[in-house]
Image (cartoon, rainbow, N blue to C red; front, side, top):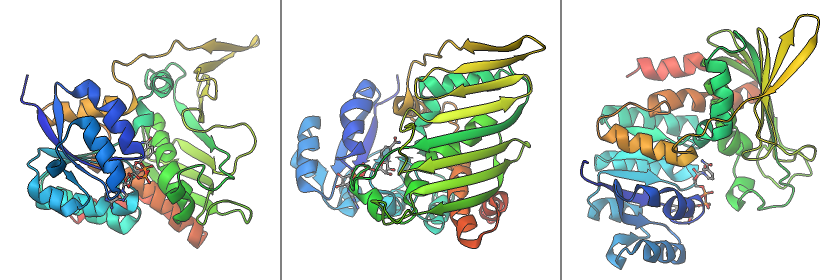
Length: 352
Ligand SMILES: NC(=O)c1ccc[n+]([C@@H]2O[C@H](COP(=O)([O-])OP(=O)(O)OC[C@H]3O[C@@H](n4cnc5c(N)ncnc54)[C@H](O)[C@@H]3O)[C@@H](O)[C@H]2O)c1
């Protein structure tokens, strides 16, 4: 086995707490957290002590950590508005990057990150853990195996009742475009994942409800045209009071040549197969059970990639196409026009 990879961990609380305590320990033979950063000194100390890190390896100042810690890569698990700061330091110190979604909180920052990482020839993988849950691997397999023939269109729904301020973590109730930037980035990426196409154009709206607990937009209704002719539609709501399709319970349906496949709250992938004259046959699909699930799938892929293995599907070059859907959607809403997402991506890739 190759040498353990040394990780500088940016973020210690919130989701980063989950990384430190739940996702990473399984990989202790393959990597080691050698430095930790968080602006909250209490959170930092608690997580640092849990990891057994001496105090001179715990930092409230990100740039000092990059200066002092020798590492092979960094993991970024802080709010999106600070991702660019961390990536630019990683680029300066030549560290590969494993980052939480979204790439950044604006298209401009995402493009800056893309350019800097490409120019420095570093590896960057972006977390899209929902692709690799058992439930979505099962649905994707039905489509990728062509069990129902060609895909016609895909519908996605996320609905969570976040009427109380802070129900979705305080910062998400404060930022602009909160559902698109923090939530729909998963769902739009899933439409790419399920359709096996990239987004050509997107149209629709994001808006805030006057009675909401959000300062930014927490409702989304969008339609999109994918590069392989598949159409997509997305309903997202942070104020959803009807059937909840919250995290890990999202609703997806693909209408196909020979029937449909769908998944909802109960997590069972079902095929609705067309049969001539005899009505519909409904089949429960046995679930795919991956060795690594969600975040751990991506950690495994990243460490394998650093060792010269296969390039994962959600690397920066690919994930920029999902993030372009988010910022294309923001522009579409503001301009009341459909937006050419393909050109947004082409412009930055060709400028390289
Ligand atoms: N993939 C998923 O399922 C999933 C789920 C939740 C969050 N996330 C992502 O994780 C990231 C963090 O989200 P969160 O919910 O943990 O946020 P959070 O507000 O809970 O913050 C996480 C930690 O970052 C620290 N922090 C904030 N700004 C910092 C800075 N400039 N430098 C160093 N530390 C800083 C905070 O003190 C906190 O301990 C976001 O990118 C978010 O989108 C992903």
